[in-house]
Image 1 (tube, rainbow, N blue to C red):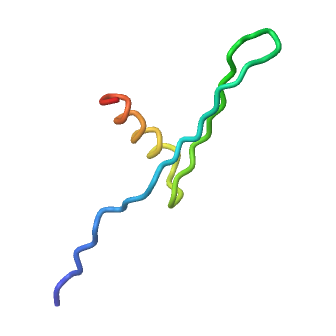
Image 2: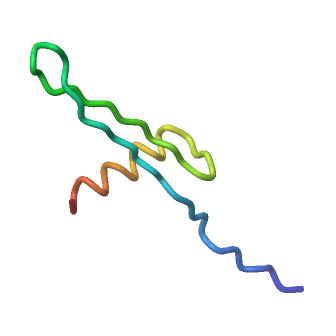
Length: 55
């Protein structure tokens, strides 16, 4: 009997962002993060930490 080799899990992290301004001419920022498939917050944080190292 052979064990099936499973591929490492993969997915997509999407960061949506927007820049606007308020009446006092200050920039305002908004962003959201979406993961497909959903993953734990700790894993998202770890992945984004790795991205920051090379971005």
